[in-house]
Image (tube, rainbow, N blue to C red; front, side):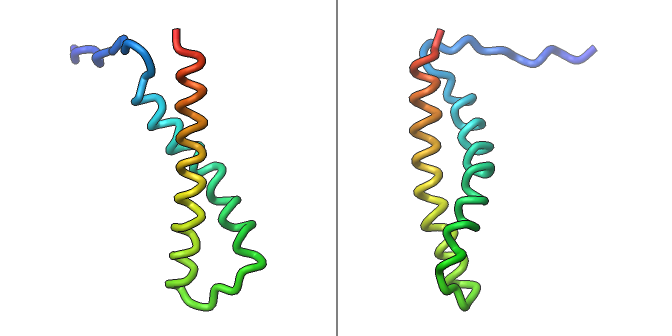
Length: 77
């Protein structure tokens, strides 16, 4: 029989949960945000499209990460 998966009981904020939640929420929020913000912008080349997505995605990522961390910090048990 395989050994059970290890469990942790972190003191303070569970940074694993914060990172996983940030990843998922950034995709769920970021993709529609980048798509919506790209509508009025002229993006003629793939390079300009990629750079636009990186610039907007970075802002979305930092906002989501700070929000998720604040939520975890406020609701820690």
